[in-house]
Amino acid sequence: MVKLNQKNIFGYTHYAKEIYQQFLFVSGARPVPERLRPFLNVPSNWVAPPEAELSHFHALFSDTDVFVVEVSSIREVVFKSILLQINRVQELLASDPAVLANWWKPMLRTGVNDVSAYPLDKVTPVDAEVVNSLVIREQTTDQLESDIRRIMTFLDKPIVFVSHFDTDYDRTSIPQRRMIIDTLGRVCRRRGVHVFDPTSEVLDAGLDVAITDLGHYKPSFEPRIAECMEQCIQKVLMPKEPVAMRA
Image 1: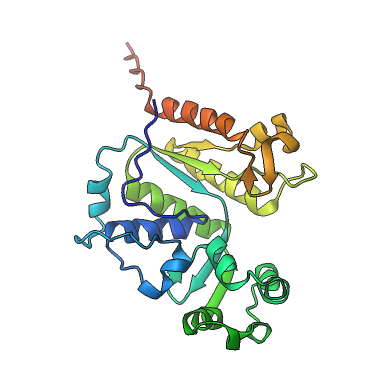
Image 2: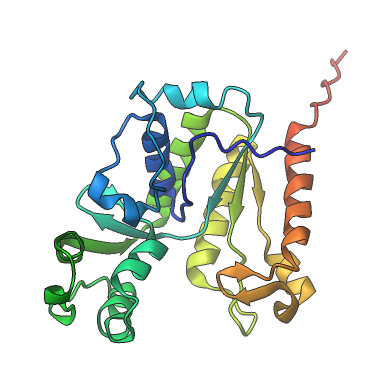
């Protein structure tokens, strides 16, 4: 049986640098700015550990047998030195259809933050501060490789990396997702680390059965993905057979 061991983990992450940042937050090694908690999806009752050392992360998860790490995006959302949670940024700053169309979507597409397209006079000082300094950029393959290796080195335990499913509505590949899957596969093969790519499960079942949109599974399909994940985890934890000695 697989038992979830969340400990002090909050919210969820999308891109590799954001994953490592959560190691820092969860361990207390980096303080979470109070005014940015909503943009990081930090619950109001979440409390950082008092130790404030990165090594505390390993103490928190000393009884964890395997880490499951999902990398689903190469798009980084940066405010000064803090990596923000992309869905929360959209919910908090671009829920208005006009803002979504005139500011948020063009920035996702081009990487250009056209602050003049945002109604700064209608938002809080914190929201205005974030809008003025927000940067959105896409990782290169080399940057993603470096972040994956850093995650592996830091966790220093068995890992299952998980990608997003790589299919558009017409069943064609999505370049950014393909880059993640290929990079994970290449880096993880070198180190004997497992990767679970759910694409074939989604395509075999059919998009109308498996997904609600390009970001989410249908609730009725989630047990199938959970079953695949559990099988992958069990393989990772399976005792290694001893190598026979040569005569």
